[in-house]
Length: 368
Image (cartoon, rainbow, N blue to C red):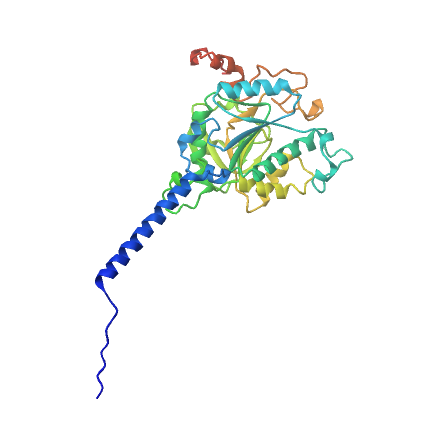
């Protein structure tokens, strides 16, 4: 019977040497990856840069109030509005970008919303210019990948303590828009959100001529020493009932009605949705936005009462007949350089010079 001998070609010394070589190659590849990474230039990416670090409430103290951008819409020739606005922003540690608004005659007909009536008495001079100026800003937000922006009109005024007011608004926006919470008793940790105001709203309407809740949703209430007393409140379009808005408080809510586009924050996803909505309209910008917020289930629109920003009286860009002037709104021919917006105790416009001089609160001009 034949005997077979099997011998394995195995040598423990050679095997050890092979392992050492493999380990050295692996280490070299790791080091080479780091060398190449450090040698290559970093390519900027707007979205990655902004999303790099989640925002906390502390970021509201920054120069854009916790939003990625602040835009102010102003006709280029309205220096009577633009100059006081820029001075007020500078005095209150706010950085805003002024965008040139457009007049009716500058708008090509193919940029009008479908259904917009150009003859008859449906619209006043200036209304389509106002609408397109806002829509163009939404388009900028989408094209430039801006996460959130506060949009204000050129007659905007706010209390010099706005940095102290908005953290309460931010907490309220999260409490309302983030509901239901993962934990029934607590909202999710704010540190996981990109915006200190939360990431689940489309419109946060903080400047207007009147707003009130829809009566079915939740209301967030916080104490705020800057709110006006009842006789100094400003509205011509309704306000919340007293039982949901005790004296000395500010509230955040999903609204049933809000009017005037003095100032509102919009998220990028909100800009996408509203741009689509405004492709068809025969309504003014604020009325169409309000209607969309009420009718579109995908839109989450929040209001604030009392409003944080109001419009300082000035000559209107929209040609209203004198009989249609609402109380406290623009009056033709009135210079607004040192005129406070209604419901603002320490006007940023009226106090800009005092603040820039470093004068203390005892030297501030107050409205009540």
